[in-house]
Length: 394
Image 1 (cartoon, rainbow, N blue to C red):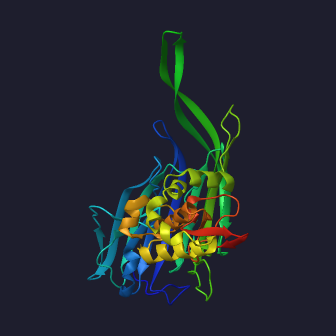
Image 2 (tube, rainbow, N blue to C red):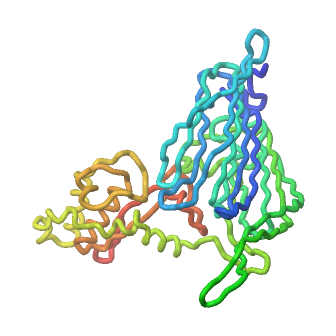
Image 3 (tube, helix red, strand yellow):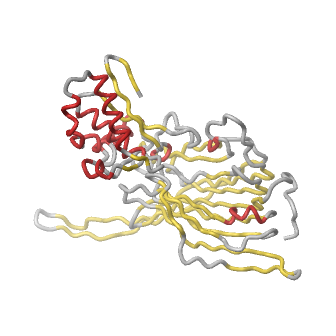
């Protein structure tokens, strides 16, 4: 409470005193495998103008077309201030968090701690539960904005799950240790007791699966924030962090199951997606300009259609590559995200026999795309690509 500055980064307006995360895989008989991440964070505010550090933002992976989910539970928060020489501890009661959609797949949950002032210490903890085992939560040891005195992350992986685990970004002071961790999972399964052409009888039984798991713990200290330099393309690629990509699963007495997807299968999934590939088939919404295009060559048609779509639609400032709107109703609305507009452009071009296709990408500052394993959340933008006379235009 008596600290007045960060010892290793004195110019800081606030700092992370300590943050700890523990990630563990669980099995639920209703929904199968999932992971749980327990997080505890304590911050110190040196300057009241840095009260934004009291905004606790948690990102959840929430694609609209999936039955899987991520959720936050057991959220608790406290603030500490010196009042008349004594520490005053206040528990913050949240009726509900503010939520907003950041992209097609990500929702931000925001808790705001009130009455932040010079000298305040805030502490919060929560549990995040996720059905998405393919990419476990990325843990950042380094902040983009403020220094971190102590960052600690532990995780336990059952022996049947083969993850590609990478520590990326800046090199920071600290290291890893590991140990064996024997775990037992109770798996419920359906056992057939009798079977004939006319009837069958079964019951549910429990089986114990024992795993010689591995537990890893990384501790890193006195970490300065990321230095923002001119012409940096993707700041999100710079902080020290650990990432997880599930490559395969090998249960006892079962064949090896490959999980990590390829860009070929990723492309097919997108083109079959009702909010992406299927949007390219709804193209007759601009048939009222048929007469103006009748005598034009392919290049002239493309320019005319592009100009028409650009003038007709207003951008709502949202970067997306998935669109929830289609056809005449979307055209009449005349407003939308990047995906709403550019997928309509591609559909319109195709309707007039122009070879057009969607190209998804990640904008500067959003992050670099993994070269081998595709991830829906790494993309945030879609543009049109067309071919005329052997030349490509974007």
